[in-house]
Length: 154
Image 1 (cartoon, one colour):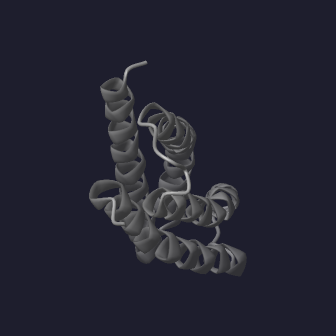
Image 2 (cartoon, rainbow, N blue to C red; image 1 turned 45 degrees about the vertical axis):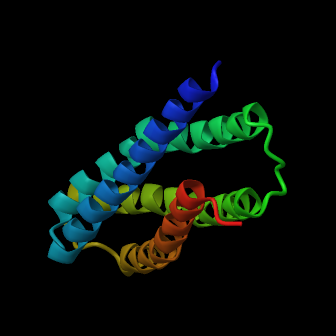
């Protein structure tokens, strides 16, 4: 595959990844602030689906095309901006993987509350706090990764 095609795929997948992440986060955050069980059940169900359809493939495509671009460009993987980009990619992944699990738990609790016509449990709101915390850690790191990829500082 030629360099420009790889680069286009890399850029498109980063756009899908960032857009889905921001959209899902906003959607679920706002649903949680309203505290309406049916709306939260709807939001959590679709956020989990979006992660499987858009986020997960984009995460994989980012790594594969990024490494392919490094190879195709003849760039040393220990180059400062690449090394830090990869380290931060895995740090964001360490935040994202628990978030996926948390979102599934939140979805299940919201579905159960809706089926039982009950309030959301304290466990749900504990998951919400962790979800916000991990997302708040990951978001600025993603911005740093974008900075590294665009400006390639030495």
